[in-house]
Image 1 (cartoon, rainbow, N blue to C red):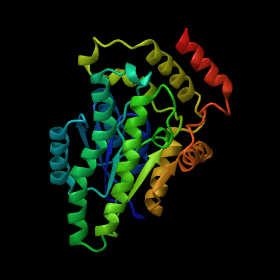
Image 2: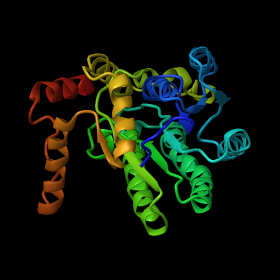
Image 3: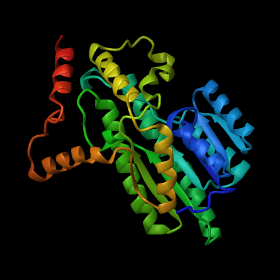
Length: 300
């Protein structure tokens, strides 16, 4: 756990918007040195300027987190500038939906590249640095936070590629937690599983690779984008509130971070399905009007 954040180094991917942006703002207020990472240059420039004006020491890096080479270079830049980071927030992510068989190969590569491999690269690059720092100083403490989703604990329909990516992040994070326990008590891990929060993820198309321009959205993908946009836009929990939960969990060494604890009821239903070997329950049992609307839209 990290209880004193001042003068510690934080690496935050997806720092240009949403949880990454709000976490960077909190880190700056706590006196941390910031490594801001984003693929969108204008957003990165804006947050870098804002936090430097607030007095933070900033290293801003435009990085595609899905690229192993780019993440390796980021690691070397961080090590050269600040040394091993104390807090790594593998947060960058994109949203995508639609009927699972309608996801083209390029979209599978894009979504898994950012949502899963971005986290895997962050763990691969920074954990050895953190372990080395811990080995040199018994008082050194570090923490890794990976952003998954409630869609990493349940399987909403018409969101296949996103669900797959986020379930993989939960698995990666739980394994990271257990692996770290085998070798150190100085580095903790957490997984963030937010529900619908206004972060801008419903506008992920803005960063969709240009190579996918010839792959227009299918009808089911357009339906999901509209429904997700409405749900995200009406979210009552803010990105800033979730970012504070991240720092609270880091200080308390708490693994699971939920933005909407009441949503865990759906996870319990899924686990009961597994334990009883029964067919997956209707995800819209509590709100049948939403299920009827989705079915009608997909069949129209």
